[in-house]
Amino acid sequence: MTKSLRRLAAVLSAAALGVGLLTGCGSDSADEPDGGAPAAAGGTFPVTVEHFFGSTEITEAPERVVSVGYTDDQAILALGTKPVGMVDQYPNPPGTAPDINTQWPWVKDKWGDARPEVVMKNGDSGPNFEKIAELRPDLIIAVYSEIDQAAYDKLSKIAPTVGRTKAEKEPFSASWKDNAVHIAKALGKEAEGEKMVKGIQDKLDAARKAHPEFADQTAVALSWYEGAVAPFTTTDVRGQLLTGMGFKGATKIDEIADGKFFTTLSPERMDLIDVDRIFVINDQADQAALKKFALFTNLPAVKEGKVSYLLDSEGPAVGAAMSQSTLLSLPYAIDKMVESVG
Image (cartoon, rainbow, N blue to C red; front, side, top):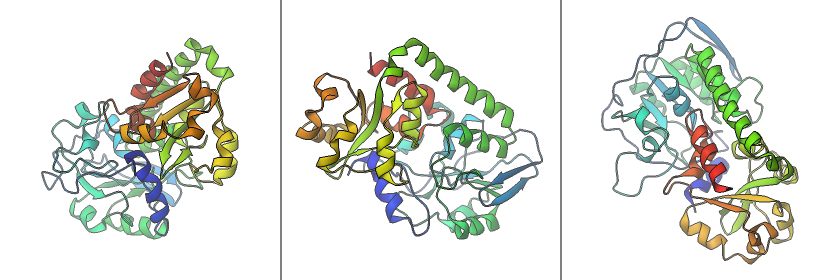
């Protein structure tokens, strides 16, 4: 199974607890028990954050923040705080260090020498509450997360906890903008978060302006998963990124996905990805397998070279940047995606 699609299995296998992961996992321990020295958060306090599970008051600037959302650590980093705990998204190659999740091109400088403790790995039934408590957090962020009420209640006994956005009935359905501002508010930096969101929106607008042809093209992002083509919906972060760049979304995929952020296609439904532009998110081995799948290679877009093959965790890791869609990864992803279409 590819690294990018491990998150799909995790979403399904962890559904009972409600903790789904949209990427892989890495090392399960930090070099230091405190995860390195956290940066001072600053910000304006006190602040009350309304969220799916109620409201949480944060009375002063947090210094020891634990991220239980799968990409929340990147928003926290972007806003000037190094989390002491985080969820592993992608697995490290055996015997390697440091954790790949601190080494992406868009986060490496932000993490520096800090080594956060891993509080949950891909496929786990839920966060490690005991480990989180040992980190002595003064704030827990669980925004891009599928925790349920029971998990939220446990986390809240450890430290003030902010869950996903109030309007987000289905986990992972909020826009990247809403998630970013939501986290920024919890850190007392709502205005700063809004400014960063605007900067990314300006970058998306610039891409649309430079490529007006995108508006006439339907695009889809997909991966090769368990021997089948697995397209992502328009409500998924990858789909949101494509429409944000100006492409039209493949909305018929949403209908058969039935609320999930992806679906796998049977041979008779390959017509759903008979679109103008395709973005493939896989590492080399799975890209090679997909290129041997006749039902895919016979699509007009493939024959016409209208496919961007984007490595997931390998090389420039553009697929990971798309899949994370954070304040830090989006500028990188947008640039690389525009490059990929010429």
